[in-house]
Length: 185
Image (cartoon, rainbow, N blue to C red; front, side, top):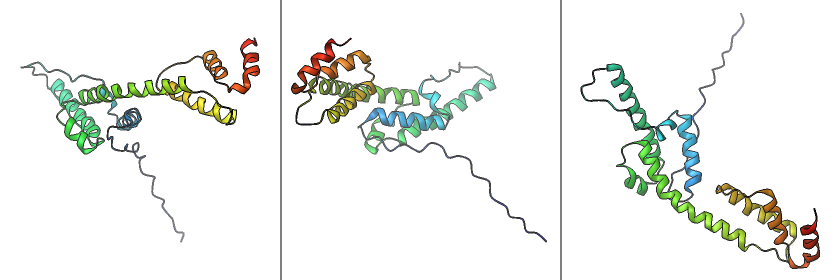
């Protein structure tokens, strides 16, 4: 008599990891994580869609059923977002009626604050100047990080501008090489 062993089937893949609670800092990162999470739950469309409208006296049960289903899923989406907020923010935004209104109001409040980050990154780029006491490679890496942050903030800088700006930021001891690079075709 032979023994048969059974291996349990793997369970269904888990949804995306729930993002950490948003407390008011680094909105863009939280928003991207929350959008991914809601997408894995098939709820992200409620961030863009307006609720369907039912006309008074409409007896179409199929339409009413569709509206009820939409309201239920919007309720889920709205509450996933609310539960992704810190308790103090939850209290502020819990009265918002739909997921779209909630998402839009969070964007309006916190993307405006991110505009200050853009100004900070631009200022950091403009102020950056290489010095003789550090290696050029470490300073090139610093400016590459600043350029990456500019791109991450949605500011496009073409490659010739990036190259010219790095040449301009070379340390004073590199004056001859800097001139050579400027006039090289």
